Amino acid sequence: MGPPTNSTPKVDPTPSSPDPVASAPTGAAVWTALVIVYVVWGSTYLAIRIAVETLPPFLSAGIRFVLASGILAAILALRGGLRRLRVNLRQFLAAGLVGTLLLAFGNGVVVYAEADPPGGPVPSGIAALLIALVPLLVVLMRTATGDRPGAKTLAGVLVGFGGLAGLVWFSGRAGEVPVVGSFVVLGAATCWATGSFISKFLPLPADPFVATVYESLVGGCVLMLGGVLSGEPLTGWDVSGRSWGALAYLVVAGSLGAFTAYVWLLQHAPISLTATYAYVNPVVAVALGALIVSEPVTPAIIGSGAVILAGVALVVSTERR
Image (tube, helix red, strand yellow):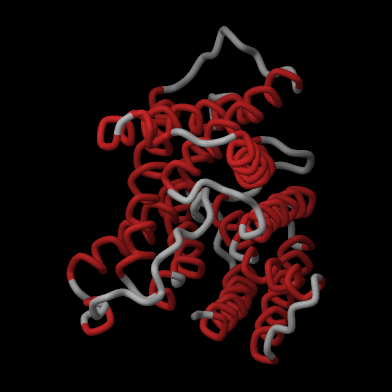
C-alpha cells in the first residue's frame, strides 16, 4: 500500500544554509525518487492482488511487514549500531498503535478486500482510488477536533466524496464494483487516516526509520494473529511462483525501496511536490490493473475516479506548507 508507515520526519525549519532544493526542485535525483514513489507504490495494489491469488491474505500481509521490519532493523543496526534501535516503552507502544491502525487495520483490510470479501474482490485500481480518500478523511478528523480548514480545503473534501458517491452508485449498480468490498476498503482508509491523524499526538521515536521498524513489526504480528484467528491455514500452502514473487516485491520494493525514496523526498523536495503521490498512485494502479490483469475501466469508473482525484488534488494543493 502506498503511503508511508510512520510519522513525518521532523526537519529543522530554520536550516543554517539555504535549501538547495528550493532553487532546483526538479533535479534528476528528486524526479528519480518521485518516479520510484509513483510507480512502486502505485503498483503495490496490483502486487497485493497477485499475492493473494494463492497466499492467505492476513498471514501473507503479516509476513510482508515482519520481514520488512527485520530487514530495515538490520540495515539500521549495521549503519548505526544496535543503540540506534533503542526506544523506551512509551515510544514502542505508540509505534505499535500506529502500526496496528495503518498496517493491520489499514493495509491488511485492503489485502482482504482484494482477496475474497462478501460480494467478490475489489479490483486493485478501485482499491487505490478509495484509499486516495485518506487526505480527505484526515481533514474531517481535524474539523471534528476543533480545527478550521479553509473553504477550498472543505470544497475539496466535498468534491472527493461526491466522486466516491458516484463511484459506488453508478459502478455498483452496474455490477462493475462490489459495493460491500468498496465499503470494506473505505473502512481501511478510515483506519489509515486515524493512524495518520493521531500519530502527531503520540510519543513516536524521533527517527522515522526506527519508528517504521516497530510499526511494521507490531502491525505484521497483529496481521498474523488475525490470520490464525480467522482460520487461515498455517501449513499446506500451494503457492504459485508469481504469488511468491509479488510478496517479495511488496517487501523489498514497496516497504523498503519506495519508503526510503519518500523519506528522502520529505527532506529534499518541496512538500507540495512530494504530496502529489496521493493522486498519482491511483492512476498508476488503475492503469496497471487494466493492462496486466484486465481489470475493467469503464466510463463510470473513469469519471468518478477523476472527481475523487480532483478533490484530493484540491486538498493537497491548499493544505501544503
